[in-house]
Length: 344
Image 1 (tube, helix red, strand yellow):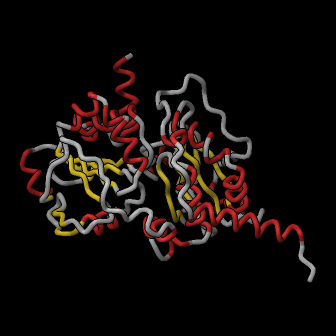
Image 2: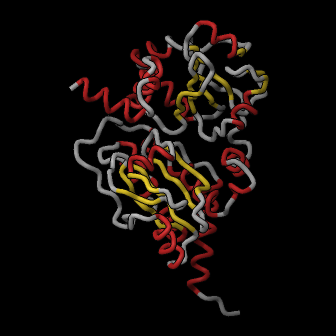
Image 3: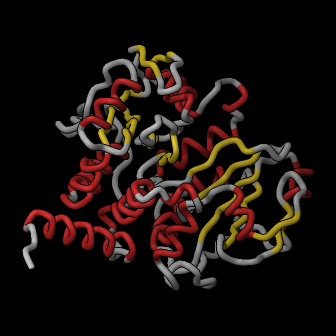
């Protein structure tokens, strides 16, 4: 029987991609540990990134004519260390890039940009306003649009290659239509992420029972750490950014609670709802560990860190919460920019 060599090559590539997406990769600290200070030189994007025509509907049509299933809007900053890490890791992986480019055009935006752009629903924004629309508190952020121009999935912040590879397949295969990414990823990695032991015990974590509604009585913000067993990224967070005195000093100003996102630990949320750690994590759409969700003294979510974080990003968010920066500006990035100007 005749087999088209090109067709066989594509099948082998997709098979290889699926295996990599389903199997947890080795713990590579180079993917998870890096200096997150501002870059000295402006970042250069891959040459296959596309500039928007100014109208995402036109960009989408161009992508569809080229056989793509949609577009991805990439929100970055010129001196963003997390953007650099994304480019150096995931976008340096040939399999990931080939798979990504086969299915999507990537349209690059600067979260501080002033150029006008029309979103797929016909509404006009500046690049900055569009980034705020999709709540890109952390860069790089990616918004996935389907063939109809509907935003169907978002990644906010930097994720290691194995996680980004899985996210790509989740979007391409349209699993978002029937399950959350956390469920998809856990299903693709049976047994690896359901271990209930091995959490990092820290003195600043409150002990059970976890009635977070009562904690509001002390007037402090609440930081909920969603972690899991066998979590190398969790270990690195605690041994790195959370081992520094500056971080600990800020955390101790809060109600800090640690939950295993797969456990049935009883929890009363800051708004008084009785649930379990597992169900609450699912309702919050937590799909990365460690994730930290911050609540104000009234029980409202302020911000969350649900991607890889190093010291400066973590410390900035801790200050933002403790200094109630969210009351003076609309978003974290704006507050950080003001803080930098004040310190200069």
